[in-house]
Amino acid sequence: MRIVAGLGNPGEQYAFTRHNMGWLCADFIAVNNDLGSPQEKFHAEFWKMGDVILIKPLTFMNSSGLAVAEAVNFYKTELEDVLIVYDDMALPFGKLRLRAQGSAGGHNGLTSILGALGDLHVPRLRIGIGKPPGSMINYVLGHFPPEEQEQLPNVIKRAAEAVEVWLKNDIQRAMTIVNQNPSV
Image 1 (cartoon, rainbow, N blue to C red):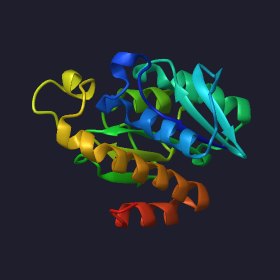
Image 2: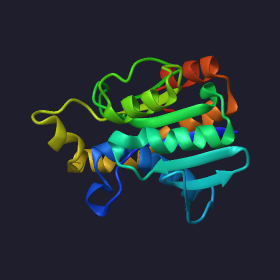
Image 3: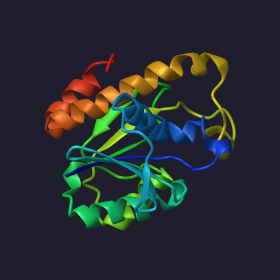
Image 4: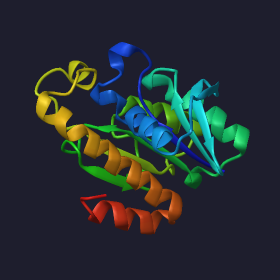
């Protein structure tokens, strides 16, 4: 069983904010695969598509580890078969970066997950949101300006395609495809 976890925050006020890039990607995957309405399981919205579990933790970003760890433990999933999809300020808006492992890089949602799983060897797809011009909290919880709103559907589509690449390839091959191809 493979698990894809799109990170974000529940609530209408967060729906189209930078911090919900992982949720937007998960929603795109669910809609494009006709998965219907999610179940609630593992403190998350939950869909099953074949041997893939798609979740959106409902625990708020900073406690995402609770939901991901519950799903991983329930399915006894190896950590290399878990993909975390989230926003990253260290990348320009729309840039994608797939990694096999590493630190949380200051991202509280990823910090929660790595802590709950007790390991840094968890694949992740980072979706660039760019650097904040001012307050980090206002930036990540803020809405996209018009020029980014226009680009957002393509960014989310490319992120979903990157998830698909990860599902079909080993991590090294997937990283080569995603990280060297700006159109994915």
